[in-house]
Length: 541
Image (cartoon, rainbow, N blue to C red; front, top):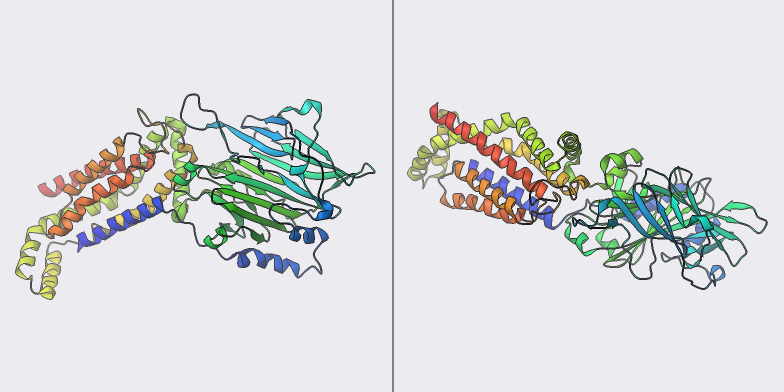
């Protein structure tokens, strides 16, 4: 009975691991109409009519097409590139449209090569649209800035951000006579910056735009599809994460209506997210998946006293996102056991401060977890030892009462009571540890701190697979040794199936992150040592 239970647990563990690895799933989302239209409808009860800006927004498609009366006739010209830098990033903004052409993270490289360039989070190819192109409503007319050639002061070709008031102002003449101002406001030690739209009327007075929309475009890289972690549109509203449903993904256009904390594009380790102003009247958001490999977002909002849109473009580091507020840390998807995974990641950071090696930090964390579960593991191994002692008697009972199942079960229960053996004693402690394992599995899978983090020797990236498959093979050998040490039942078929588990796990772990394989390997070695000690004690007692 015990072996069947353990077999079921191990098989379940393997199935869950494999399923999460090869088919990462997202939590079920409520329909768009429930989650976004309803809040808007409730707010709509307090207003007699929508504002002109809202009506114009409704008539514009995701692509930002304008009404015939508001289309510009400015010819498309080649713009200039403005370089903006702070200690964290190097941004390149094109004066044609005020678009973000490149955004290089100085602390992250593209790959492990010595001459690898800084990682660029802008992946749009061709003619765009590029991120942060948008549109502004001025006196009821919408103007696409991607069609405008902005002018900049002569001394603004390069901007080194040294204070929180550093900004870049782009100005463009509109056919109506007004001058559109698109302003970028940067911070010196932050991945957050702001975009603000205003205009100068013909009398020289500065006004806020009536309403604004902002675009973010992304083309999926081939390696993003192989990360086994969700990449795509991600948002947050009413305390819940939003992801497009399968039905929505088939649509060329989505309309998400209601107040949003944030919305953007996420990958395994990085996120570009648009943050509407605090207490914005209504945040109207539309998203469109034009092709399988491309994602386009357009956020729009009615202007109130503060119509600046904040943008965060950078790494998904828990403490960093948590400090920004707005529940941005929810973009790091730890899965079902996030409440356990988050403190485990914090422990990894703590250990790394002293050992300066995340591989060693994983080993220390593994030892700590093993010590925490030591009493349960000890109980499990002692139960296995007792089971091993009664195996010969069980075999005789099975042979004697092979044609009488009810009598066999009764005799087996009597045997367990006589020798004080709990047939479930060996598996229940394992069940308790499964949530911790899955939490750590997910934590190591998504923790950006492990990206390009070396261990030693040939393992130069704990977030990637072992390039020579050495650790998975050693891990499989330790599983096989542990399996041989574990008492088997009299069922030969079950015993053979259990011996196949190390092979299955080894094959599954070949492409797992080296950090996760390291955890499993160290845990196996510690378990073998503990099991050996218990077996010796059982043999001498």
